[in-house]
Amino acid sequence: MSSQKYHYNWFSVEFKQSRGKQQTIIQTAICTLLEVQQKTKIIMTQLLNKRWNGIAIVLLSSFFFAFVPTSAKIALDSGVSLMVLLISRCLIGLVILAPLTYSLREPIFVDRSKVPILIIVSIISVCLIASTYHAIGYISIALVLMIIYLFPIGVALITTIKGEEHLSRTQWLSIIGVLLGLGILILDKPSETSFYGVFISAVGLLLFIAFIYYTGKLVDEIGSVTINLQLSFFSVILLIIYIVFVPVELTLPSNNYGWLGILGNGMFYVLSYVLFFIGSKAIGITTASVLALTEPLFATIVALFILNQYLSLQEFSGFIVTLCFLSLFLIFGYKRDR
Image (tube, rainbow, N blue to C red; front, side, top):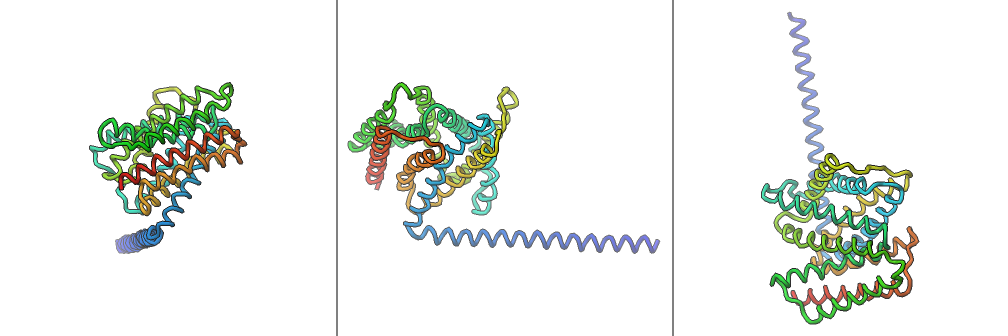
């Protein structure tokens, strides 16, 4: 009996010691995490104290985003199915954003009343990404992005129709200039331009307008990082449900370039998104939106060097005209708001 008692007591002591060690490890991990949070907050505050730092961060965001469509194109050309590309992008976003949201002390969960609208926006988001990736299989990345990046005009037109905003004469002239530049870009070689690709890009534009309009109303209530985390989560759930009930092709890349394309597609998107909202806190969302118009320009340069997607002189001229008038539209809108 004494021996059994001795062993039992020994076991109890060892168990308590083991439990104590586990608690110490957990406490150390929590302290380390809190220290990282504090240092991250200090670095963020120091970075955002200067306006030029904010500008540099937004431009860096645009540069990283430039690799997203090119990465998607590489993955698709390597045999990856569209559904695999969509799921991988959302999963990578979820894996990166979950710890990031926690480290920034942003709320991870949202009120139940916000779930329906988040599901709707997630559906819009998935359809937007799918239409963009589908379009780059038919027309150049430069043209796809230039069409989709007309979204500020679309959002402004909706708010004007609803009486929430009023466009100035300069902005209306800018819209005409944008359409002129887009016409020059599209009609360079009509016989070689896939109007199906243009149509799919236009659908993507409408989806992007809806996406920006609805998320813009949620940002102030939930927070930009939390919204993106929730959208990634619901998008993964919706895509899994779709796969279960609808037979779709699920093919993996046939070479290493395809895997790099999948990884780059997800990581560059999340990185660019986070950097954009970090920079926008320092310089304001409107100024950041104007600077974000460099994304199609950077994306065109990346596609030129990696995919050999060259622009003719007329295409380049139309590209620059569209970009300039779009910038003018946003700048005058910014001045009016001030």
